Structure formats: structure tokens, C-alpha cells
Image (cartoon, one colour):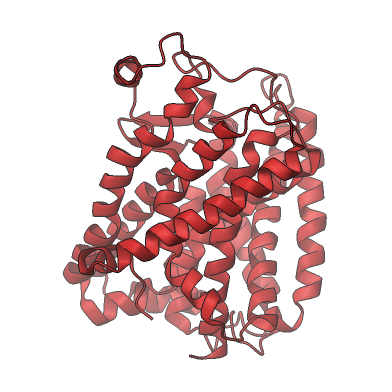
Length: 395
């Protein structure tokens, strides 16, 4: 594998660890209330915080805030990198069939079966009747079907459908997108500015209209109202970079993004601090804040997101392109781990509620247990041919 390809494989392993850490730490955020969120009453915040523990650790708030800014956008960017090569190799119809099989089929199983199992402890912490029958009645009474972290896959599937439809109608659109990334190897700053500007155009009006925290639900499909267009920008930015070529574009191992990763990391930290400061001024009181202040905070999000994504890409491409069997295995199992990890997260957090342990210790136990059990589960599923075809990685 080329240095860039190996670095991206390693980054995939790192991203799944960050995802697991993000969800493992949510129960211990300092800003949460003392009591769990009601299972049967809006706004159903238990979807984001299924377990609320009395043990708290403020640095977890900072970590989760940073990941909320850039992690999902990075995942959509990475998902778009190989779309164009797959489209040109398979054609639009075969590409769409493979995506429906690989994303759609596991998604149905995860949302239909795994999520009700994962959220049972959430019901138990505030339930009068803890029986399974009562839980099922409460679940069916909800005005939606909770999808948990799988909301990411619903939108990813939608973006792949759009990519396939565009290819059928406009077979050379990837090559034209690639021109937008043609000088990113030597001029990553220009790529950053364009990415931040386009994502701001997609994000700011939606955030002003719906606030950054409001979610919409249609049955099992959930999405953050202000972000679908923003995520689409990152997905097709990945398509553009991948269509131009990984080794000769933005992600070249000797390109300017990789060589100046430290500067990009510094920019990411400064941008995140700016976003955090502006957001603190309007948090919980968006309706009373001026439009100018809201706009500034939402522009700060676009800058922090773009710089955070590029800094991590540059760092990995420059410094982490060595191959490791363990990291390769983790990378190959990342998709399956994403599908199953939430069960282990929520049940471990629930099991530790009564333990007299510091938040850091509890979070470490949850993360370690989730990592090992979701990894082992994925390896076991992939040992079966059907499981390997659906969620296994093809190197």
C-alpha cells in the first residue's frame, strides 16, 4: 500500500476509537443534570445521553465538544474518498446495489434489533415497571423509532444514492469536482478556505433557522436539522479529493498539508477555542442572542470543523503510515464495531451506575470493555461468509 493509503487505513482505526471514546464519555459530562432524562417525555434527550451518571469529569466535556464539531464531518469526508473510483469501476447500478447491500442491510438489523436492546437500560433507570413487556409498550409509544448512532449511516446511504444518480446523469462530474482539488497538494490553505466557505453557506442559514441542537425524526431516520447539507459538502469534498488522486493531491505524503501538520493543528486548536467562546455566549439562549452573534458562532463552527478535519488528516498522513497487524485488524473491523458498539457502551455505563468510582475510572472501563467486545463481535461475525461480505473490509 502507498503511504497515503496506509495512513488512511490507520486513521480509520483511530476514528473508530474516537467514536467509542465519545460515546463512552457522554455519561460523565459535567454539564448534565443530576437525574436521567425521562424516557417517555420530549425532547427525548436520552437519545444523546442514554445514561446519566453522578460521577463527572470536566475535560470529557471539552473532548466531546471537539469531536461534535469535526468528527462526523471527517467521517463523511473519508467515506467520499473512494466513491469515484468505485463508481468508474462498477458503474452506477452496480455501485448502488453494493451500497444498498453493504450499508442498507446491516443498517436495518442495527436499527431494528440492536437499538431496542441498547436502550433498555435507558428505560430502566426511570421506569416504574421494569418488565420487558412494559419497555416494549413504552418503545412503541414513542413518536419515532430511535436509531442511535446509526443516523450517520442513513445519511451516508442517502449521499451514496445521490452520487450514483449524478453519475448516471452526469458521468464526468467527479472529474470536474477533481479540478477543485487539483492544487490542494501545494495550496491546502485555498482548499481549506473554499471548504470552510461552502460549508458555512450550507450550515449557517440552517443553524439560524433550526438552532444547532434540534433534531428531526421520520420513523427510524434521524438527522440534525442544521447539518445535512454541511455533511453533504464534506462527503463530496472527499469525492473530489479521491477523484483527483490520493497520492498526488491534498493527501500526498509529501504535500504541504502533511509537511505543515503542526501549523494546521495549531489552527484547529485556535479555531475550536474561538467557536467554544462564541457558542458559550449563546448556548441555551439562542432566541435572545442577536443574529450577528449567532452568525459569528456558526461561522466559528465552520472554521473549527474544516481546520480540525484537515489537521488530523495531515498529521496521520505525515506521521502514521507504518503498517501494524493490530491496527490493520482494527481498521478492517471499524465498520462492524460502529454497528454494534452502542449496546456495550450503554449496558456498561448502566452496570457502573452504583459503583463508587471516579468518572475517569468508569469511562476507562466502559471504553476498554466496549473496544474489546465490539472488536471481538465483529471478528466473529466476519468469520461467517455472509457477515464478511456485509461488514468485512476489502483491502
